[in-house]
Structures are given as C-alpha cells and as structure tokens.
Length: 205
Image (cartoon, rainbow, N blue to C red; front, side, top):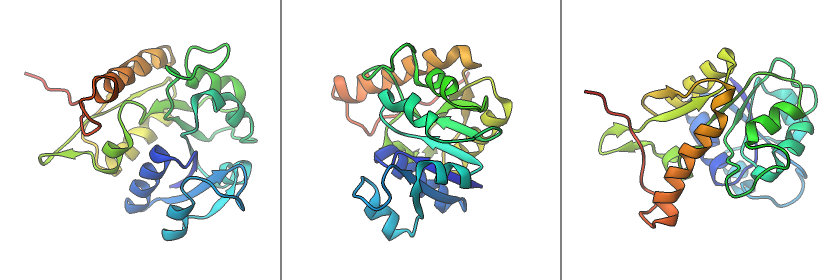
C-alpha cells in the first residue's frame, strides 16, 4: 500500500518504520521539504521520499495524520483532492482542542472531501507502536469510524506492524469516546508517572 505520513514526529516516525518493515511504501508530507523538520534524519536513513503535503497526499492511497491536534482541520484542508482516499487520524484533542470541534476526526471530515476517515493509533505512545509486544504477547489496538473501507485498512495496518487484536469502538459517534480512552493511557503513563512502557490488552473469560 502507498502511505503518506503527514506529521513526522514520534508517532508518525514510529508508524512509518513499522509500515516500511511490513512492506508498504511510505512518503513523508511536510510543509517545507527543503527545510528542517522532525523526522528528516529518519527519512534520510531509510530513504523515505519527502514531498509537500498535497503532493504526498496525491501519491498515496492512504494518509496518516499525526500533526498537533490544533492543526487537524488546516492540514486536512491542505491535502487537496482526497476523494476516495483513506485517512487515519492518530491525534487527540484533549490537550489541544480544535476550534468548534470536540475531536480531531470531525475536524478532518469537515475540512476535506473524503468520508473514509477513521481514528486509530491514538490510544498509546510511540514506544508501543515501535514495539507492540510485551513478554511475548502483542498488545491490542482500537479503532473508531463509520467507513468500513477505512476501518478495514487501519485494522490490517495495525496487525501488519505487530499489534494483536484490534477492537472496534463503533462509528463516527465514537470518536470522542476513543479519545477519552486515549486519555486513560496518557493519565497512567504520564500524569501518574507509571512510565510510557505501559499498554492495554483486553482479556476475556
């Protein structure tokens, strides 16, 4: 799959490496390809092509958004024509809300011309995306969104990079809930100082 990663910080970089190892084609989309940006060294080391945002989006079948939450709408609007393309929103609005929207995925949907938007990879830290295995067991991932096509792609990508089960939170009406679930990880790992090497799995009797 051809994947454009927009936002090349810790999360975008960790996901990019996982996608590449799984055999996918990755390009970075940044505002200024000739300037300095977080992830440039990674792009050089792994020969990841670097384009401006609309060019990267135009190349890709699937777009991963990992920018600051406050930029969600503006970045989505800058993608260009993305009708029929899949967007995975990895962002959380808890600490950095987007004006007029309670979550980043709704800001994305309102700012571009695709309906195939899901929220995934937002419920844990970059460390767990880089290595989702604890004591020999893969941790779980979670996804929300009404687009079946986008949800299937996100689930497959999560499994491709080593996650175990991918639990479906429901449709677009669950975007806020999955951001609240992300806050549980943020609270324990960071605010309660349990450390970022902490993860969630679902167990059933």
